[in-house]
Image (cartoon, rainbow, N blue to C red):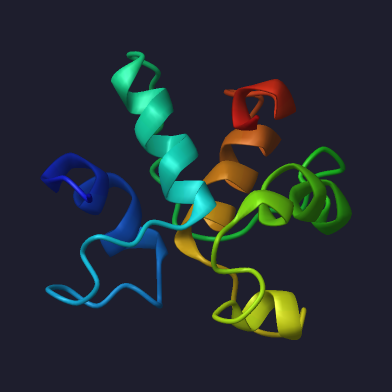
Length: 109
């Protein structure tokens, strides 16, 4: 279930797929990771709402450690079907946090 803090920190600023009031029970893998990081007291705010170029946040790495475990990957993920599509907010925020070295790939497991 999405809570207000998760929506404010992740969904509203980063996710073009988020629709307020719809499918509130569903969370992408990125949202699950961000929620866990928030619950453990980690700072997940970056002040940026765009993707960054970073060797550590390379698409292949993100696909392996994040997308590979996402429930939306098979049927509902536009980005998994077409790498030219916009990724989910979890992917954007977590790639930003990785690039800033605020988290590691281990934090996403």
